[in-house]
Length: 112
Length: 114
Image 1: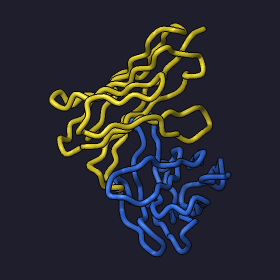
Image 2: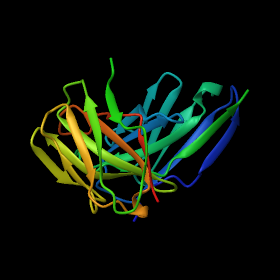
Image 3: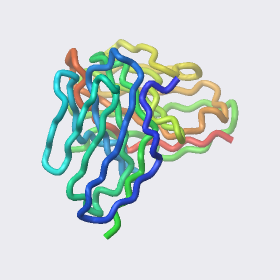
Image 4: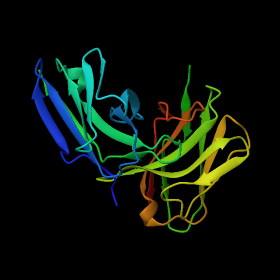
């Protein structure tokens, strides 16, 4: 029972364009959402997060949007750079440290 | 500044063998976690610990045991390895707090059970 779903296994965009990664969740108790980035042979690293009391959080080129009614969040990367090529995991939690659920990941490729 | 270090990075086991994965963190974090990553499944929590001497089951605990004898170390044990435990294992740590804060992950251990 996957409570967090990333339905696009892969995404390819041109350098300089916008990358949009999507994530859907089913548990209405989730109130904290995170995005992690993972390069090959490395562990995931934290990228950006958002609390359910907000609908947008921005950090440089990265913006996360949250639509609670649709149980949907998205990560926007503008402009995309080749160094952004990685697997991106969406994660959600009720606020406890033991119940974070991860999506299966989306592999982003940014072409020069 | 090592962060979270996992040992070993790779391992091949025969069915029925046992092994221990070691995780060490130097950030003085209270919370530590063990995840496994499988294709199409994302990361799933195996066990976690909210402090020295405490452990608890996560989402997929069967076939694994853990110990947290020292704050900086979190060990994951497989008593009798099965092919279904072939996976990439990640350890993570995070500071305490009611809300999830970002977790810091190790580089992973690729385990193959044949």
